[in-house]
Image 1 (tube, rainbow, N blue to C red):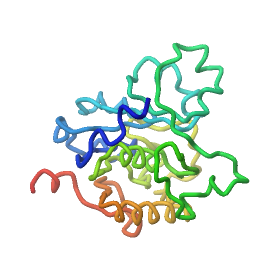
Image 2 (cartoon, rainbow, N blue to C red):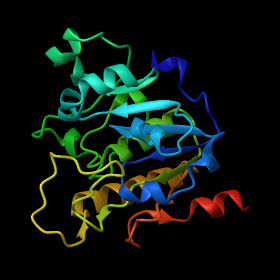
Image 3 (tube, rainbow, N blue to C red):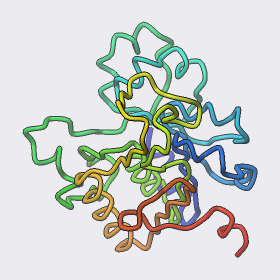
Length: 232
């Protein structure tokens, strides 16, 4: 099934929409004619100025099972799901929606689980990959294998200014934060993974840039602004 999409968008650019609170500050009308990926519950951005999306990505079984009614009713193909969703009773009890499997190495005792952190990058989509730390990394790799050469990211703040609003649509109940103080969502695993991904993409002449207004870090993603992309 993936063969129908492999390198289909060679040389083009795309946008990955995350769920960070700063997404509400972005002028999403600027990307009305662009190729767009949404992740997890990102379809809610359609109520906040996003005109459309082209690809849906969900790799966390807990996210899928908790929000399966929404996901099954709201999303459209092409969907990219973790291949382990086939092990979920919820999937088989539902409409058994069509999806393209993402081959995730989830055995924590295997070197493949830490492949991205070790700089072992997949050279073919069917190689799969291990822990990505964030679904945005999974999505960037999918975009790479679809042939995109410019990958722009929005709503990936890795920072909560107010812990009562963890996402652009409110607070996820599954996220427990005791303090109302700002929280940085940076880990050593994420730092290493993204830096390895940047090297890999650079080798393949692909650029990945975080345009999110709420991104408060200077040493992981390359950064820019949405307005600058369209003012060139």
